[in-house]
Length: 91
Image (cartoon, rainbow, N blue to C red):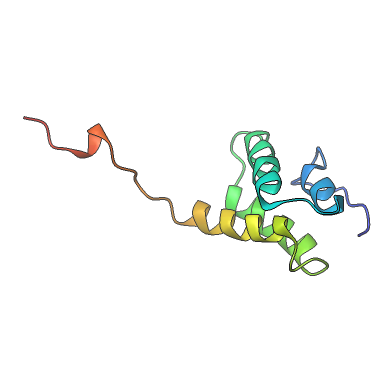
């Protein structure tokens, strides 16, 4: 895979994940989280994940990071409220 200076991957975390032979899905998830936390405030997360996915998916459709990015895209676009004490009505 050719080296890329993708604007949404300034640290090269996603690029490097694709270059690691035998990387696991759990390792990719950890790298994705680190990448997501390093995005500047105000970044359109859906657009960032989409553009990175377009960059790398074509060369590595079966790579674990492709699956994580695809899952991340789905999770980002469909946020859901998790239960907890705030979900119950107050007396």
